[in-house]
Length: 130
Image (cartoon, rainbow, N blue to C red; front, side, top):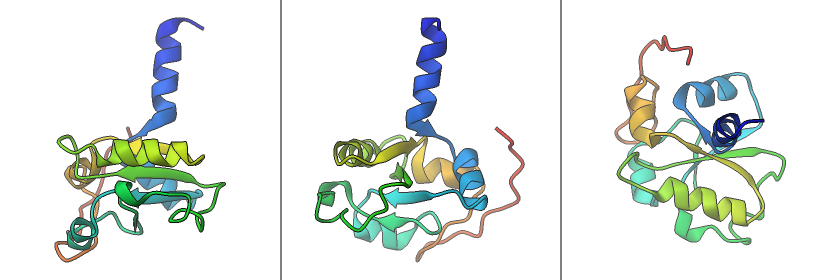
């Protein structure tokens, strides 16, 4: 395999986009979405069905109840925030299979997906097919 192919293949093993995540959730795949931000940010707005585990609190004790066979997708606010990266790193260190959501909550909303929380948005019809 040439180095370019290996690079892009590896990149897809560690990142996902809004379309692929929404399709995985829609199809009932064993995916758990983790909002790695503070509880206050999660309460305002988050991806439907996400669980809030702030990256600073990820320990063997706080993750002991999680399904080890699931794929975990971490996210944060978006481009200007690296809580999703820190969360993905922490989860990987704890032995979980993990990907990071590209663009975080910001791109999730820009792509038209609904959110939950105090500032929830209903979303719109999505025509992407990325």
